[in-house]
Amino acid sequence: MRARRLVMAALFAALVCMLLVPVAAVAQEAPVATTIADIAGYDVDFTLPTAAKAGCLVCHGDENLIRLRQGEIVSFYVDPIQLEAGPHATVQCAGCHLDFAFTLPHAEEGEDWRRTASTACKNCHQDQYVEYGQGVHRIVVGNGASADADEKPLCGDCHGAHDIVALVDNPEGRQRLHENGWHVCGRCHEDYWDNYNDYYHGRAFKRGASDAPACWDCHGYHDIRPSDDRRSMVHESRITETCTSGDGCHNDVNTDYVAYAEIVHKQRELLEANPLFNIIQRVRLTIVGWFSG
View 1 (tube, helix red, strand yellow):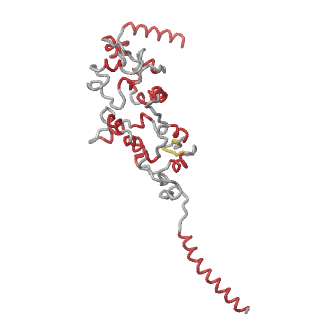
View 2: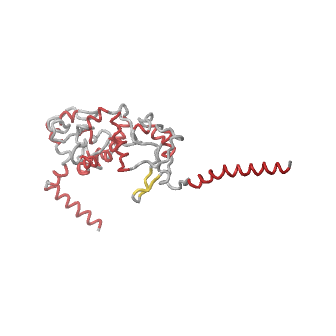
View 3: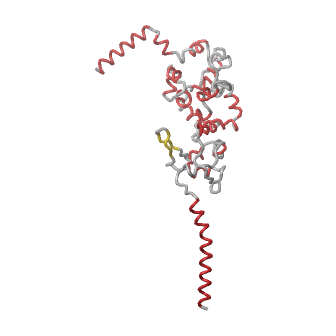
């Protein structure tokens, strides 16, 4: 009986060894992913919902989510509180980031994802996109279109991204935009920003006067056109209409107003052409030199 038990135990041990050998071989053949490059195509759909913000914020809701780009640390953190307070609180991330899928890391060939997100607005705001396509900021299609596209602003460049604010029926949002004139227009049109310095308009606007006109109050919003275009809000044939429109603007426009409109961006040039102004400037600089020396 004892010999019989020993034989059965030996057979069982042999069977176990036969089963374990293939498993060990497979384990040795399968490489272990230890770097980001190794897991670049790793599919995480089974853990995160592809189209939901909850999935994206698992990573982007972390304040420590950063990457090193061209020697600079760039944050990819998205503030969920800021996102929920904006007008797109009910829009899923993939509603704007149309080309994103859960691959790690996201594909970044040519940084196309930025352009995709900044132009996805047209899918919901079609009227505004049509107007944008008729103005000076439209992207030209054809020869040289790629270079032109790099220089022209997209929706997100002016309105913002995750921090965008509602403007329709929202005086507070419009005021925030009004205070952000440099970011919206000035950083691209520095010359016009610098010479928008007349006392009643530009200087007051830059000092934070809520009733002073921002760039878009005179030039328009999405369908901005060159001043020599008869459809432009600042064309000489429409300047009277422009000056009388809007809350707190002029309701008694006459020829003097129209003449003044021509120097809103040219006051500095006119002053420098005035001999008396040049004399005053030289005296001022002399006095400043006395005290600074």
